[in-house]
Amino acid sequence: MREGSLEAPVRHPLDWGNPDFYDEEKLDKELRRVFDICHGCRRCFNLCDSFPRLFDLIDAAGDAEMEGVPSSEFGKVVDACTLCDLCFMTKCPYVPPHEWALDFPHLMLRYRAVHLRKEGAPIGATQLTKTDRNGTLASLAAPIANWASDRGNRLTRPLLETVAGVHRDADLPKFHGKTFAKRAKEAPPEVSANAPARGRKVALYATCFVNYNNPAIGEAALGVLARNGVACEVVYPECCGMPQLEQGDLPKVAAKAKNVARALLPYVERGYDIVALVPSCALMLKFEWPLILPDDPDIKRLSQASFDISEYVVDIAKREGLAPGLTPLDGGVTVHLACHARAQNMGPKAAEMLRLVPNAQVAVVERCSGHGGSWGVMVENFEIAIKVGKPVAQQVAKLKRPHVVSECPLAASHILQGMERLDGVDVPGEALHPIQLFARAYGIE
Image (tube, rainbow, N blue to C red; front, side, top):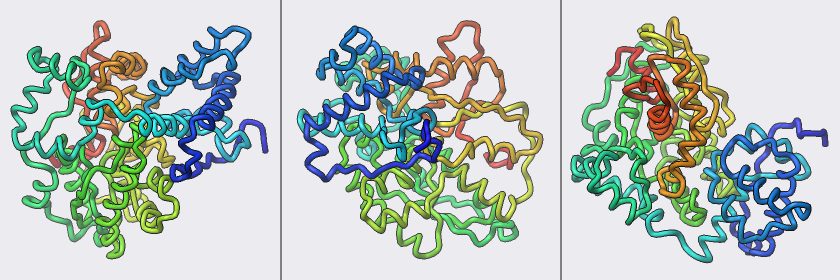
C-alpha cells in the first residue's frame, strides 16, 4: 500500500442487514478509530462543520485526546454531516483500498441508522421527507401552499418553524398545480428525425423535485433531447429515497430502490437509457442503491444504464455530435458543481456541456453550497448551512457573471440566499439548472 492511497477510491457495500451494524459498542469502537485518524490528519477541516466540531471536542480533552471525549458528544459531529461525500471523494487519503478503509459519510449514516432504530426520527423531519405525499397534496392547492411557505410570510413561517422545525428564513421550493409527468404527457416536444443522435431512447426519471417543484428543468431536458433526436418517456414511480437516506432509514431506501427499479428496468430491456434530472437522484441510482442492495442484479443493471442529464448530453456530443442550432449566451456563466454530481466521479459534466455553447465563457465553482437537502432548512442547521456556503456565495459574487447555474436546484437557491447576506452585492434574479441554460442556447424556452 502506497502512502496516501494513490489508488482510485473504492466504496464497500453497507452491511446494514448484519446485526453487528446496529451494535452500539461496535459502532462506538469504529467511531473512535476513525475519529482518531481524522484528528491526526485534519485535512478536511474546511469542508463542513462536522470536522471543526470533532477537532474542538478532541482539543478540549487536552492530553487525553480521543480517549477523553465522551461518546455522548459524538452526535454533534454526526448532526453536522450533510452526506455530501466530498471528504470521501476529494480529500481523505485513507479511503479504501487503503488499509485503514475510512468512509466518513457512511459511518455517519450508520450512526443515524442506529439512532433511528433506537429512538426514531423527529416528527417534523419525518413529515418533511415524505416528498411524494407533500408534492401531491400541495399540487392540489399550489398557490396556497406557495403563499404559506414563502419566507416573507410572517404569519405562517413562524408556525412552520414551531411545528416542523423548518427555519423561518430558509428558502423553500415552490409547488406547481401540474406535475412534470403530466405536462410531458400532454405536450411532448417533436423529436428531430435528422439529428445525429436520432435513434437514441431515454426513460427520463423525473425525480420528486422536478416533478412537483420545478417542472421547467424537465421541460428543458425534454426539449434538448428531442432537438437531438432522442425519443423520451417520462417515468416517475416514486422518490429515490435520498431524504430517507439522510435520516439513516436504510430499509425504506431499499424498498424504494426495488420499486423504482421495477418501473425502470422494462425500459432498459427495450434499449432505453435511464437519465435522472437531479444529481442526488442520479447518485442514488448509480452508486448508493448498489451499495445498499449489492446482491440485487436488477439494481446493478439499472445502475449500469443510468446517467445524469448533463453527463448524457456530453455523451451525445462525444459519440454522435450535437444537433445544430446552439447560439451564444449573453455573457459568461458561473457553474456550481453540486457535491452529488462530483460524488458520481464523472468529471465536471455541467461545465463540459455548457462549453459546447459557441463562445461560452464558463467559470467553475467547486465547493459545497452547504445546503445538504432537507438538512439545510432545519432550524438547528440553517445558519450553519449559510456559513458553510458563504465561500461559494462570495466566489459567485466575485465572478459577476450574468448567468449562475447549479446542478442542484436546492443549492442554486441557497447560493442566492447566501449572496443576499453579502454587502454591496447584486444578487441575480435566478439561478438555473445547467440544462435550462443549454435549452436557452437552443432557443428553447
